Length: 490
View 1 (cartoon, rainbow, N blue to C red):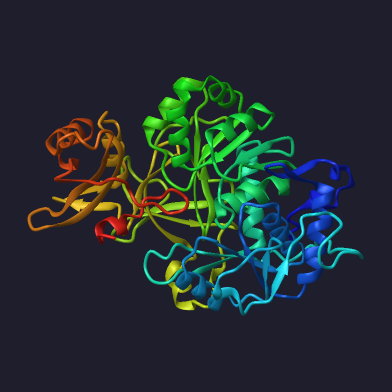
View 2 (view 1 turned 60 degrees about the vertical axis):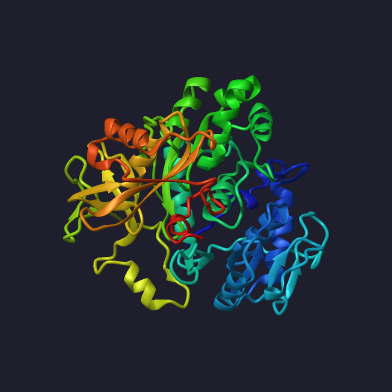
């Protein structure tokens, strides 16, 4: 049996701050009242959608449904019409939870609407007792989160309650994360990072989350300077922080006083790691996870935050590398690259309505195929090389990880952003292609200079054979570069 939010029924926590979005805040007592009311209204629905804006109504709606043992489908308000229609048709929610006055797109007009009040005593269903969380079975679905769908339509990953509890408890252990911590972030609430880690994480532990609404370095400085202890972000956010630090002593002081700075959802370039550490004395720690697995690895709060690594496997997570021949190794040789496979209580139960895709995602002995390529350091730290489909380049008999070439390019003073892909080559099999955003677009570094820079830093066979200059790199909501958009020209 899995109780996700013990603080909501603890009278000692009633007056503790739980959520803050701008100037709107809720204590644990107020959250229990508002979410309990939602839970009473949706009890028995099976599955509901939540229009996941960065607002207290989203948090109240999600928590309320989870109290009632109802699965939540977070909807991205920026989704296109076709994608949103697919998600709604595939998940078939009984109703959609929204903030009062929200106008929804056509794809949701046939779904019954429930306006969520974040006020303790008002809104639909006010009066009477709200739902209190039952000790639901750990396999009961908690969330159905749709993947980005790089091939085909997005798939709904069904995350059970035990997966949320297992991941959050493991992170609490390695980060010494407690109810005394105050987390600040500006992440969207329709992804695992912002919703599960950034919102449900503090609420499970009895701590506080302060959401910035829209990320800004000024907001980070303000909240960390006013008692927040932890910051969650993605690499694009930390890049903006690194750029702002030289001219912002207040931001520098605020970061220096934080207990933990965490980056995830994509690799943080070593250059930004070092710039932040040099200015603040604090090193950013990284972790590695996926929608289907929640969190797999993390650098510990008292561990070494080495740039380019995502730490060792979390407690309770099994991790192995599998080479091209299918041989599985939990202790591969130095520098040996393989597909990362994981198992543990953190895993999803399957893709909604997709039994064939679910079966293909797991090995016969129950390991989940992440599709990510990695290297295991001798001390157990994991280094992510890239995606098996797009980031492992086989050139001239060598296996080249796109990530290491990207980091080398980013060390060149004329490169602002870089992405690396492979393309067919009649001689090499594949050749390394660099996509570069120049610091000065009018005078970018020449291709030969960049190739020599990479060859000197890594090895000659890893140098880019082709350099293409772009004004910007296409990215998704979490800052990941959309490499298929580069290679397919759109």
